[in-house]
Length: 294
Image (cartoon, rainbow, N blue to C red; front, side, top):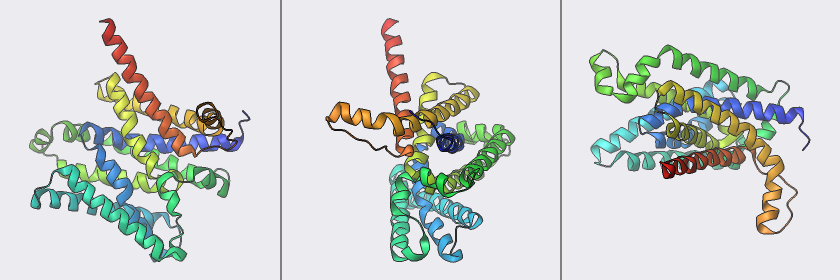
């Protein structure tokens, strides 16, 4: 395998995006709202498209504002349907995010000349093209580093408040905190992270990194700080190994299992999602093996 500078930038960018996704993903997982990340990763699409239509260019500030507004609308509509329609939270979220996602796809089709978003990139992104299209250092890498720093600052600054609101909203409210406000804050961070990652890695990797590393880490530890660190390590490792898988192992696996040669490579975002799932499966099997010996 010939490793180039571009491969380094791709792995670095993917790792930064994965870490950025993990930070809000841990708390969504612990509060049993992992599907919210799935919903937000899709529901922000109309906000992004409308921002494109208004400015006719990729203005990051307007995209972030559009995504955050779409994320907040998702939360409000989900709670409204849940309480007034007597529908459980998972179903109400499914109704809202599929509706908003479909609305975003329709907008993209209707205004294809102005939206400048490839529908295929919505699902699995185009990280390689994003790196090649930018100068060095790539703009997407810089933006990813900024969102990682922002998420880290928020986590460190409000760790106690987020922890209380996640595990015991009633106690948090009695101590003067506002659990619902914290909830919408996490939603806003999730939406902001999603829009940074959206066109580069698509919604698949956003969802995979927000759910799979925290779920894997939870099998290894119940200590919150250790869980966050392990989740970050798993996501970063998945980014590097996922890119190696996409450029080196994909063709060999196709040849081994299906009997025909494949000279191409697969999408890096897909490779990262697969590797993170392998980590999860490996930990499950390891724990079951340990239990068998006890």
